[in-house]
Length: 186
Image (cartoon, rainbow, N blue to C red):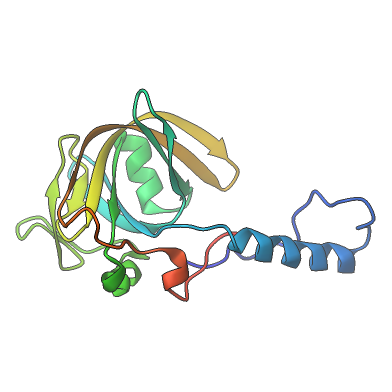
């Protein structure tokens, strides 16, 4: 995880921001403001056929009550994007606040041991959709994609919750972006 790089300032710009220096200053300000939005940190499981992956993600939200829909933003170059696009399923797992180190284990494509049922050494099981669900997760949702919305460098996958549950007590505090030194976005 980290800030997207390789590009200069991104518009649009408010009135009065007309030169490159002003655009850079405004772009930095806007990123700092966006970083103040509260975010959770999750592990998203994906699957297509026999291929599985799990990835740290922070752009997730419930988008509808009826049906129960959850949306996640996934960067297009990510393996998880490829697997969700092809497989049409994902799981969203919350992480115990005391397990903050776990999210660093899922910032790159994982080592899958199908025989031991582990992803980077962490146990998983397949949900009803086939998406991998971490057994260490506090809670989880197993989702089937109903819509994929192009959002520039990301796709916002909307999934209907097909199954959900807790592996820990409901009142277990879950990890949030501000609990770490990580940031993403802006």
